[in-house]
Every structure is written in C-alpha cells, then in structure tokens.
Image (cartoon, rainbow, N blue to C red; front, side):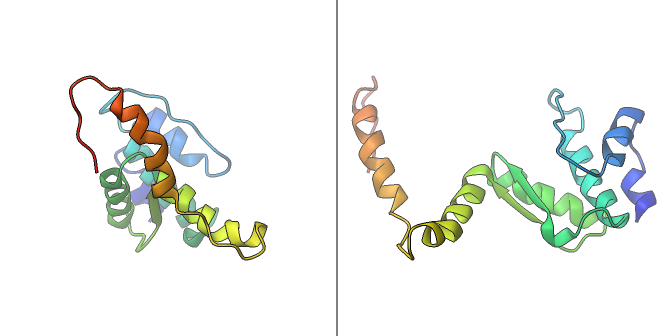
Length: 132
C-alpha cells in the first residue's frame, strides 16, 4: 500500500504526503492536485501505522467533495474513512457535546433559529427572492 500511496506524485506532493503527523495546509490553485495529496497522505499515514483509519476525519466544503475524498481514499486501499462538510462535522460535534455540557438538554433547533435570523436579511435583498 505504501508504494501505491506514493506512486504518481511529483516531488512537492510526495513531500507533503510523507509528513504523517500534525496539521498541514495545502495552498495551491485549482487542478493542482490538492485532493490527490490529501487522499494519498491519509493512505500513506494509515499504511505506515502513523494514523488509525478510525480516527481520520476529512473535512471539505461540499458533500460532493466529501464523497470524492472517500472514493479516492478507497481506491488507494482504505475501505472506509469519515468525510464530512465543515457544517456537518460541526453539527455532529454539537449534537454529541451539547447534552454533556448542558445537563442532558437537547440541542436547540438550529434550522428554525437560522431562519429567524436569515429571513429579515433576505427581505432586504433586491430582486424579490422567495423563500419558505
């Protein structure tokens, strides 16, 4: 698996993939291989024993990107890794920790609160936007 995780990478990508500890920011333009580097980095870290695949969470901006990350990691030989959008990951943490920090209280309904805040702002927008 290690060979697969490093195959086809250029020198800069390989360098990023081989760093298996700590956070990393990858700053690059569209189409430069950021998703490839991240998926290969996860596969390499798991293959070398640096990371437990059950403790990996890939966080992206869109659900489509999350699905793509899971598929790319799967193609590198890892059966399952968690991937979520930033919002989904944050909501999962809120749902888990809220009752622990608030004496078992249920998490407030976030969507209805959001609507209460966003609706007045939407009314001010030009163009007659409709919302429900």
